[in-house]
Image (cartoon, rainbow, N blue to C red):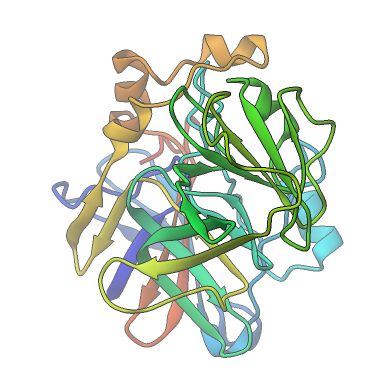
Length: 326
């Protein structure tokens, strides 16, 4: 039935090695040929909400939250959404909360690159096309016609790495590993080089941060060029023309087969950054917390695209008496 199934963010879909029996509890027809069904299982307490909708009849938007804690109901109301599902550009969690694990590309701007090859969901409103694909970001930076390394984008830098920060980045990330900050304006001209933390990232520009002794020949006034391409790892497809690309969790299924599985790997990486107390309390960098998150039952969310071009949204209730999760 499904071409591909993409678990969203830190959630995972049902592992194909488990055979679970489902029963349809109820089915309702919504507007524009969309359907909403509720599934249960006689094997354990589970409630799964499944919505299928023809992609050609709907528009899909990625709506950023206002602040850190805006609820989905609030976002749905102000966006006048017909259907809204929770999803985030989550970081790893715990004290390693500085590294964003998944690709986030919205309105031609990069919010975060991806650290591991992973499934991503994308939408092109012009062609009414939804994709689920294993995507990667190919970025190039030229300064004075010389190519310079870009090891990561909008991630906390480590020693020896070269990091590019777009104006969508949190400015505090530049303070993690102080270095040489090369400020590039919207015209691609280096407007300043400083070892002090800049107050802002130039609008529609960048800060290229490297070790303090790196690139001694770079000077103010030099011209730069930054290009990037969001590409498929499976074929020659390119997705820069899409409205958004959002990476899911490190597990991707295709035709009931695992295409990629990096759940444990991605949670084992990360740069230690602590912003608040609960990030230390829920440290998913430890084996114990990883097993709790991945192996135990929890609320889960997944997206799928069927062979007849319908989008399937699955939300499983969890941590409840009537639904343990998946």
